[in-house]
Amino acid sequence: EVQLLESGGGSVQPGGSLRLSCAASGFTFSDYAMSWVRQGPGKGLEWVSVMTGSGDNTHYADSVRGRFTISRDNSKNTLYLQMNSLRAEDTAVYYCAKGRYAEAYNYFDPWGQGTMVTVSS
Amino acid sequence: DIVMTQSPDSLAVFLGERATINCKSSQSVLFSSNNKNYLAWYQQKPGHPPKLLINWASTRKSGVPDRFSGSGSGTNFTLTVSSLQAEDVAVYYCQQYYSIPLTFGGGTRVEIK
Image 1 (cartoon, each protein chain N blue to C red):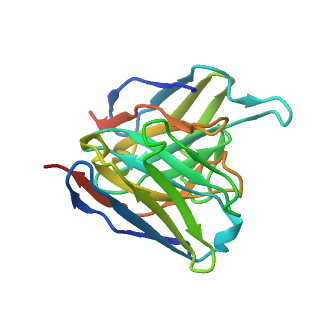
Image 2 (cartoon, rainbow over the protein chains, first blue to last red; image 1 turned 120 degrees about the vertical axis):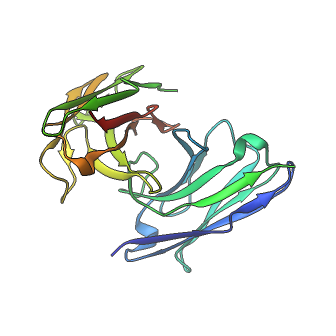
């Protein structure tokens, strides 16, 4: 069974940093692209970033480019999201989501349970 | 960026009746080389992550009840729940994976009338 378990969320002041992790199991991690998708309180879904299965290609939403960095350790079956220069509008539940294919252009199945990030002074 | 517009924002349907959700993309998500529409539908229940229902616009994921169906091509798509059940109360999202950035519709909340 595919499982995705996010961790690393919490409360941080504006301008601060956090690193999220997503531990994956139940599939050959390096064969699939992985994404981060977020959902602000009471809001819809917003794709944040994707990394291809091999790790050779990444993409970001304009709203986070230059502040967030996605990475993965295929030896540890773990996806990361380094979030710097956090803003109040980054407050959201952050989901880790498995792509159906190795390349970036993907739908998501399944999703992790999410980890909450709150940016507030 | 491809903008995904869903309608309505919410709808209330009697148990056993049909629910229809629309999704329109600002440009075609039909890839001509393989004739596939890069469009997925998700269901999200309160307090839970989204779950994939349909990919390639009309391919139901294994295990998804057959009362859920997807249709459409190019820029106009529909998710239909043929006979609404109590457990179908949720927010439904469409998503295009034709181009980066990957984008979602704003969601449609489905309730029981």
